[in-house]
Image (tube, rainbow, N blue to C red; front, side, top):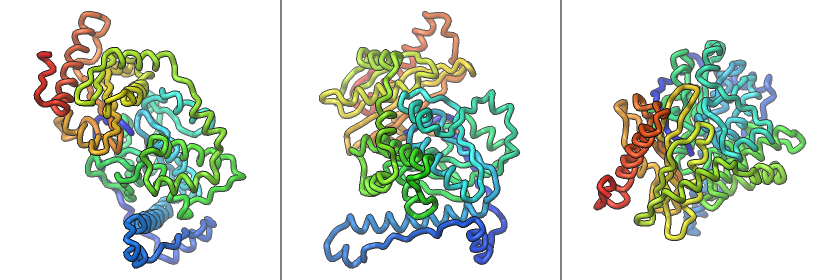
Length: 432
């Protein structure tokens, strides 16, 4: 899941020339790339005879995976010997981190050098443990760091597990004129993005599932004797597990991906990542959410006040906790997050739900709407969603405790009002 920040529209840049078939084959031979494998598919009439729609879906999934893998390979062949930036959301989760690493390993076979970057921070204890224990090659580029970088030394950028609505880095990359080469995501469409290669599948539970299918198709042959492959497979397993709620929300494609990764991942390493302890500050935010929550129509809504930028991931963890309460099917937790480096404040919130008929993406978009540019303040996927609302002119000034309290009370009331209009339209949260 990811949270939304200012959206930017992208214009794709396609290469004007393409290698002919002979040139592609020559380059493949030169790079010693394995041919893409084509798993055998059950006969369509067999599915009809058995009345089994699941087999048809499996066929469709396999066919699409092969098609997309071939398209991605063609794109990578067109960009060999280049340097690319792989841009993640400001607060990358295990799904994003693991898929970016898998993409980097795939791209290396085409002599494409990729740098995995994000502008925010890793504050969730499992994300920190994942990066440290696997030595996952992700770098934090703040807006200050960006000033010292020569973006013209890169020939393109890639979006993994996001669609450009969640990174502070996008504006600078666009201004440098870098083309969007690859976009792979499993969230609902956030806008009209144009990339040379696009694979957006909202019905797939995790982007890690999509990348595992790329591996199965032969874009990268995993080898258990290569430590880097084992660690990447472990990271992908963690990403898949995380975005499917420990496989509780997994579908057939996700289980098949997990089965494939089970041949290569390190169970002991994954257990070490999952055993990472919550910090005291995260526990304090969870405690605040418990004290401040209101429960109506099986929705638990809690504002947790002000948080440091580095503690932002405490909000989704608090939502994860509140949704486990008896007679609660949906939890929304939000707070004002302060970025001391840039003197910015944003309202950040997370939604978690176990209600199958509630679409987090639709719910959040209906509750908070769009800004003046048409950008939605939030979105989601199955079972989870988030929103991010810039405070603009009202940022800062919290040295005066009375003013800070008054500002929080106004934002708290406004968010509750927008949420409760959907939860219980008869209520007026401001009067209550």
